[in-house]
Length: 419
Image (cartoon, rainbow, N blue to C red; front, top):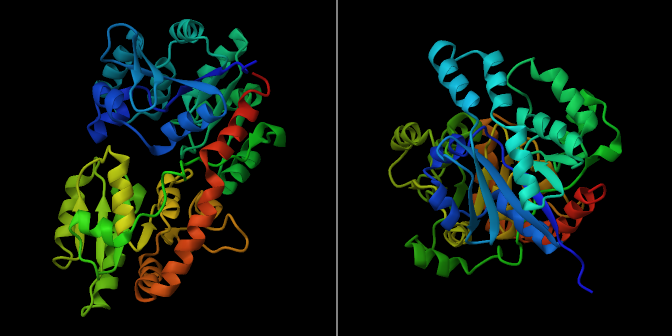
């Protein structure tokens, strides 16, 4: 007899769908047809391997009634609920009269999720578990309360949020932490922060990383990838890929480091490959223009096609993550799966990836915010091809521990324990 499948309602962060996706020029139609990758769909696929069907639930001010569709690349059902009228009016008023008020921003965030509408949708879809993207969010507090009223356990993951908008959320968050089904935290640093701040019992915090389809994300032939992309075959290439947010992603540090890297190698200049776009694209364009000509190639778009991202990674020799803040960076995991050594800032999640295996070093970890240290580490791997290949091979071996099958089983064990 076939075991029954379970339905998990996954609520991404953000008050509205458009709050995040407008910044990367992704519409609901584009999302339905093309959006793939990232932690979100990796979760969907991992849970699917463990016989858990996932339903994505968003809120939006652009739909007059509940909109349901199927995400074409994964077959995952998606529901988009209309943003509550009170939330729309409150946001408009806040933007007009007090756009910088953190207190009002918290109130607005709590109004973004209608417990009644969400409860109806959960029942309609037959969901047995609620999973929020972030626990440091008003939506998590609302979902925990709703879960207590409906008998559905509410969980949350950690993807980077570490505080709410104002002190108003503190008592509500502490209550939600005590009442929730549990937290899923891949970063050891973040687990320590949560234990210290909320004094949760160990059983409530599950150490589970973000997953990746390592069967698909594997090294391609580097020369073939470069030929397909038109890159020179004999030039050392360092890749960064992600959303263009100058401060958060540390792109100012990367460009400062890259200037040093190029100055020290005027006779054999490497190439910095940037793949991604976002809200700070115009500022990045000005900064890139100040670097030596021909030392940066920027693919200025949010690349929907993960096969293209895979091809860019396969063409590179080294990957880098200079971010000032991350949750559990999937970009690093993607690079490691493609056998790239990674030079990354010492932030949340990085050590859990690059030092996941005690006997395998997968790259270099440098002090966060230090452009000089970043330049030195990049320079070493650019100059030493043997070391680069050795670390890349180790990175691939480590990445295999984060497969959809392994992580999906761990997620299902936690979510269904009380579900």
